[in-house]
Image 1 (cartoon, rainbow, N blue to C red):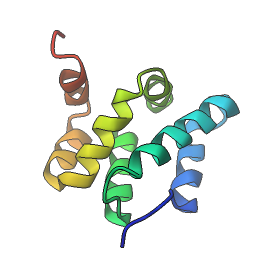
Image 2 (tube, rainbow, N blue to C red):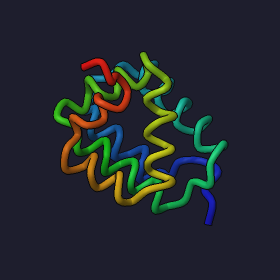
Image 3 (cartoon, helix red, strand yellow):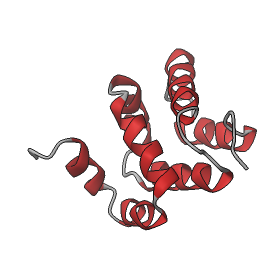
Length: 107
């Protein structure tokens, strides 16, 4: 079933990850970016789970969430991966550094 907005569980988990280290304005911007992007895709509960797994797999989650707000194309790429490929999601969970290879191939 397609989700129109993020579940409360997802929002709570992101709040736990940020653990008060993200200002509320940044947190709100992040959630708005994600919700605006999921409108463009067939985003399901499984996609939401994939997205959360990718975020939880990052080495420095708070910095990564800050970067997602600073660079909105990160969210676009994350949503596309989480919606379209469990395989790529698994790769990013195991090797989170690969995400930066995708978004910045010069490194």
